[in-house]
Amino acid sequence: MRKLHIIEAGRFKLDGGAMFGVVPKKLWHKLNPADENNLCTWSLRCLLLETDERRILFDTGMGDKQDQRFRSHFQPHGDTDLMMALDQAGFSPTDITDVFLTHFHFDHVGGALKRTEGGNILPTFPNATYWSNAMHYDWAINPNYREKASFLKENFVPLKEQGLLKFIDVRQNIEWLEGIRVKFVYGHTEAMMIPIIPLADHQVVFCADLLPSSYHVRMPYVMAYDIRPLVTLKEKAAFFEEAIANDYTLFLEHDPVNTCCKIIKNERGRYEAKLCDL
Image 1: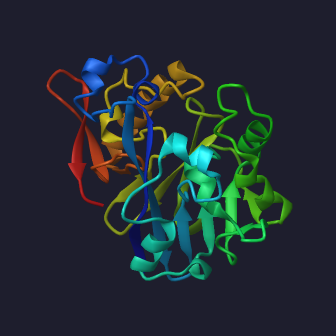
Image 2 (image 1 turned 45 degrees about the vertical axis):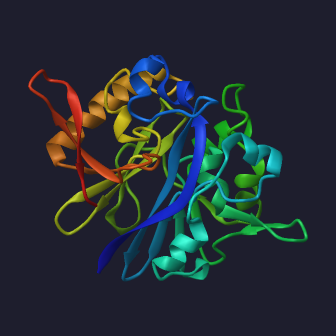
Image 3 (image 1 turned 60 degrees about the vertical axis):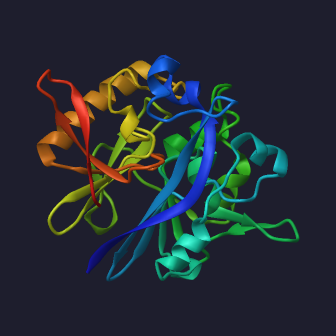
């Protein structure tokens, strides 16, 4: 038995210019309109793989550990959160056996740990093993100025200190648990992990910030958050060719409307998103 569950961990806001990089607002505003503060709404969408042996959660949203000042910058909101979504899918935090963390930016790892009323930081999923890689951990523990505000040590250091964090070898297409292959990409941040999940009749790719939304399929649409945008361009192009060749279903973590898409080429040879179901 192998089943995927969409886990909607809420929504948040980010600056539209930062999310679309060099693309003019006149163009991206048609895709995801900004508010009066130039902020666009984005999803915090996680994925749960249920098998006979494991229940693997991919990313954890931004959580609720941060103070009100921090939260005011990103305005988390929505009709659900990580715990509510898990409950609606029929699971409790103790059911999760593994947590796969694509990278340690706060909107992907924040829900991995929780703060108690006494101020202690404990694992949200007490029976789970958490997974990252040593290259990314070392990068995040000594952050550069571009990413410093995104790497909050309380979101991932306690995992290592409490012996809950294991590292995956940094090798392309390494096979991890349950036949899941892991790609490593370096444009958005150092050694971000992209899992390719095999199902009975297709493969699902959890795209993380390699492809945050269907709006980012066009090649110039690269986030200003990416540390190496030219590398992102190369990684996107290579990945899109692989996605077409293998008919991948791409799971979109931040798309505010669409959950999944496939990549196709139009008559002019340009990549386009073809929306689909999981």
